[in-house]
Every structure is written in C-alpha cells, then in structure tokens.
Length: 217
Length: 217
Ligand SMILES: Nc1nc2c(ncn2[C@@H]2O[C@H](COP(=O)(O)OP(=O)(O)O)[C@@H](O)[C@H]2O)c(=O)[nH]1
Ligand SMILES: Nc1nc2c(ncn2[C@@H]2O[C@H](COP(=O)(O)OP(=O)(O)O)[C@@H](O)[C@H]2O)c(=O)[nH]1
Ligand SMILES: [Mn+2]
Ligand SMILES: [Mn+2]
Ligand SMILES: [Mn+2]
Ligand SMILES: [Mn+2]
Image 1 (cartoon, rainbow over the protein chains, first blue to last red):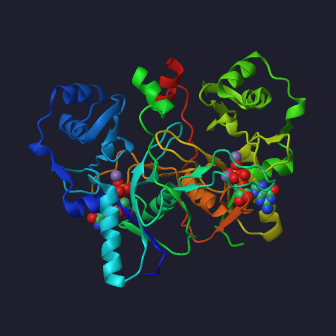
Image 2: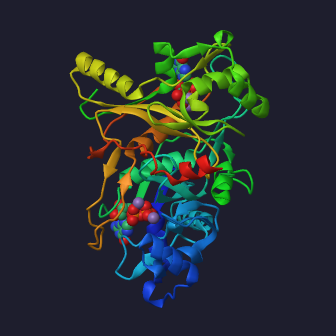
C-alpha cells in the first residue's frame, strides 16, 4: 500500500461480511410488493425487500427503480440474489460512506498509509443498455472533480464541468472485477493523480428533471 | 502498439480534425431554437445547432436533451463551445462508429497491430450530478460484455448481466484526459482482457422506460 492508492471494493462483499442480507423465508410481502410482483413476475418477497430498502420509489414496472437512504438511485434498490446462498438476498450497505471510512481507517491503522476507498455496485443507467460500476460510498477523496472556473485551451472559462471521478474509477474497477464467478471483489489502483472537488453527487430535491418527469407519469 | 491495445480518443479532436464544427455567425436560429433559448438563456444560434444535430428532442428545458443520429442521447446533442476558437462550436462526429473503424484501420496499416478504438465524449447522466466519459463509437471490440447464461459463485444462472464495458473504459480514459486545458485527447490502454458480447448499447424504440416517461410529460 502507498499513500494515494485507491481501492475499489464491491458492495456485495461488504454486505456479506457485515450481514446486510435478508432471508426470503422470513419476509412477508405486503400489498404493494404483491401487486408489483404480479406485474413483473418476480418473487413478492424479493420486491418487499426492495421496498424495505427504498426511501422513494421512482418506477414500479417494468422494473422497480428506487432511491435508497444514502441517496443512490438504483434498480431494485440494489438488492441482489446473485453470488449468495440460495434463499438469501444481498442488500446494499445501509451507510456506504461509513463503510468506506471504516475500511480506510483500518488500512491506515494496519499500514500507516493513507489510501482512498470506493465502495462500488454494478448498476444500470438511463438511455443505454448494460450495467456499469458506480460509486455508492467513498472516503479519502471527493466524489466530483470540480473544473468550474478553469480555462480551456483557448482561454474561455468553463461553464459547467464537474467530473464524477469516483464513478469513472468505479466503472473501470467493475470491468476488472467482472460479474458472476470471477471472484475479484476488490481492485487496487496506483498512480491516479489527486483532485479537488466536492461530494454532492446526488441531486437535491427538485433539481433532478428526469426524476420529476418520472414522478409525474 | 500491441495487438489488443485499446486507444480512447476524445470525440472533440476528431471533430476538429474532420471539420465537424459550425460557425455561429452562419447560423440563423428558427422559431423553436429562439423559444428554447429564451427560456434557457443560451445563444439561440447555439440551440439551433443543437436542434440541427438532433433526431429526437427528449427535453427542451432547463437543458436540451436529445438523441443524435448514431443513437446516443446527450445534453445539447453533445455540441460544445469549449476547447475551440471563439465563434465556433464543435459537434459530435456524424458517424462515430465509422470514425473508430477508420482510425483502427489506419493504425493497422501503419503498425500491423490490431487494436481497439473507442471514441469518447464527456456526458451527464440521470440521477447523479457530474459528467463521466461515455463511448459514442468503437471498433475492434463489442460494446457490451454479455454474461447472460454464466453462473455465479454459487452455481445460479445470472439473469441479467450485460456490462457496458466500452463505457467503463471511456469513463476511466476521461479521468486521464481531464477537461479544460489538460491537453490529453487520447489514452492508450494495455492489458485489458478481451471479452465477447454485442453492440446493442442503445435501446430500441419503446424499450426505454425513462425516455417514454419524458415523452409523456
Ligand atoms: N472471492 C469472492 N469474490 C466474490 C464474492 N462475492 C462476489 N465476488 C466477486 O466480486 C465481484 C463483484 O461481484 P458482484 O456480485 O458483481 O457484486 P456487485 O457488483 O457489488 O453487485 C465479482 O468478481 C464476483 O465474482 C465472494 O464471496 N468471494
Ligand atoms: N492537445 C490537444 N488537446 C486537446 C485539444 N482539444 C481538446 N484537447 C484535450 O482533450 C481532452 C478532452 O477534451 P474535451 O474538450 O473535454 O473533449 P470531449 O470530452 O470530447 O468533449 C482534454 O484533455 C483537452 O484538454 C486540442 O486541440 N489539442
Ligand atoms: Mn450489486
Ligand atoms: Mn457486479
Ligand atoms: Mn464533448
Ligand atoms: Mn471532456
């Protein structure tokens, strides 16, 4: 480990290590979960877990799209039935920022090196097919590199340029991790130059026009 | 150059090299551009270029979100007034798949090595603040790695796992490129293992629920 290294860790193994899982046989689906599951053809207990994780439901069908408490918007609240024993489902860590901070502190204690940690999940996105890795928690860096106020090659001030660097790193880590049985739950980066910015990666209430449109339908 | 290397190239320099630019003084804004520009506070000629590039307009305000002819959905049709001389705006290459193929062939001719090419653009996304690099054209690889039918670590068949690998690579390349005056328009990757999959990264008409919702509002 060196100062400035960045480690991406799949949320799924944090959840398994910390017990953020649910056993479907202990879940009793309510009316809403039953109604949604009838339309999507999924297990109503699975949908109940999805709803339990959600603080806001943006889409019910043909797939549930929800916001979870950390601010992340994801399909099925990020609940995952893969890479876990039969009957269990994996939920996202309740506070992924805290998980990242905890791991960073442990690594610091063990190695005396100051690294960055990104907790990742594989997520879909709008307008394009296919999933990519996203950052759902991070520590030791800011989520967004802020270029506002910088000049371009011709001396004009850039108007809007906030780069979601943590997602770009999480995406590449996700490629290295692979899915399914690859067995690579963490990726170690060295040599990424540091950046400055802020952590406001999630839109505030009312700022997100796509969410507003989904709510109106 | 080695066989299997991947080169990401910023669309902006392809457009500048190929003349995919417009001079705003030659643009006469129509009614729709004038109406949108009044609401967004932008130059109506700039919006006219955005509309000229669009084959479908998903959102008009507070920012234009459009589909361009290659299938990519982007803010302001990807039209960019940064990193170019005053008065010019850069449009996306009309056929970024062809640009990628052309560059791949030229590199093959020059070096006899077979590499992959990804044409990138810096784009926003839904539900999260900040831009990331996206692939708008590629050659020598498939856009999506297809894990469907694979088994997870516990032997279950994965139901949905299509990984948009080209976007994950484009995102990381975008981080290395930086924005503004960084002056790094291309990034060379070595050692990414090959994958198999398909090129259907854009939803077909009617498949995209978020787009359907935007159209209804
Ligand atoms: N060694 C090991 N790898 C795992 C385990 N669970 C998941 N992985 C690997 O971690 C990576 C990410 O797993 P995935 O299920 O896609 O997690 P997610 O992207 O966080 O939803 C893949 O390479 C998996 O094979 C585990 O229990 N042990
Ligand atoms: N050397 C050089 N770099 C450029 C030029 N135009 C843009 N770049 C660099 O290429 C990278 C991407 O530029 P950007 O304007 O963000 O392009 P986009 O992401 O394709 O819209 C940045 O590092 C820019 O500084 C150019 O004309 N010459
Ligand atoms: Mn997951
Ligand atoms: Mn994954
Ligand atoms: Mn651009
Ligand atoms: Mn850029």
